[in-house]
Length: 258
Ligand SMILES: Nc1ncnc2c1ncn2[C@@H]1O[C@H](COP(=O)(O)OP(=O)(O)O)[C@@H](O)[C@H]1O
Ligand SMILES: [Mg+2]
Image 1 (cartoon, rainbow, N blue to C red):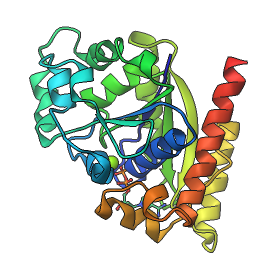
Image 2 (tube, rainbow, N blue to C red):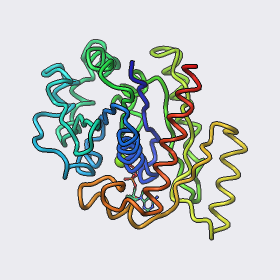
Image 3 (cartoon, rainbow, N blue to C red):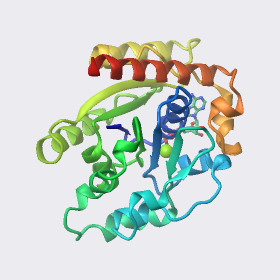
Image 4 (cartoon, rainbow, N blue to C red):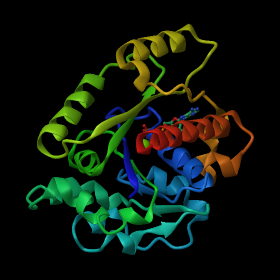
């Protein structure tokens, strides 16, 4: 049964999509059957691996509104073992359209029932809000991976995210765990990066991944070519960082199963 990991932080620009795309690609490259679900109406994860996609047929919008099964919108994404459930700008209306729908928080959970077994990992790229789309992701997930940008105010807003996680645990998904906290856009030359890293570690302790994602131009450039960094620039620091992260995520999964 696939492990479902929501990549969430209501702050924009912290590296959620970069992490969802590149961690998915690296997990798939390690031989794990991996599904990337793009739950952000901006569809950045979809365009970030678009070069490998042959045909986009529908999006998670139709799935959440009950107009199509998840299987119907899944396409292969250019790496063996990597599949994508694409987003579309129409998803921007979904939160409003779903407001009066029965079981609205569990639409993704339900859609995953028939496909989970096909995968080792399902990663969900969340939008930068704590609205109904993110709640759907947290409700469907086994765990949440939180990217934290090594910048001023990194921890600001995290208590809100943790509060949402607690509410979802209480009312919708009691077994939801924190998968890990990931330091992104780390710059070892900056005291600020080191300070933020220390602060995040003092708060989340061993939940913080040993792998830090460095600030790296290849990671920023790869999406404009529609490719994960391991295809665009396999020897870059960014590719190396995400391969190491995939190793850590895979290792903790093995430890949990053993
Ligand atoms: N490690 C990194 N090094 C350089 N640029 C990065 C890195 N991570 C993300 N970016 C860039 O920063 C911007 C925001 O990242 P993104 O993953 O889209 O954040 P989010 O999904 O949280 O909004 C994007 O332009 C992305 O290419
Ligand atoms: Mg994003």
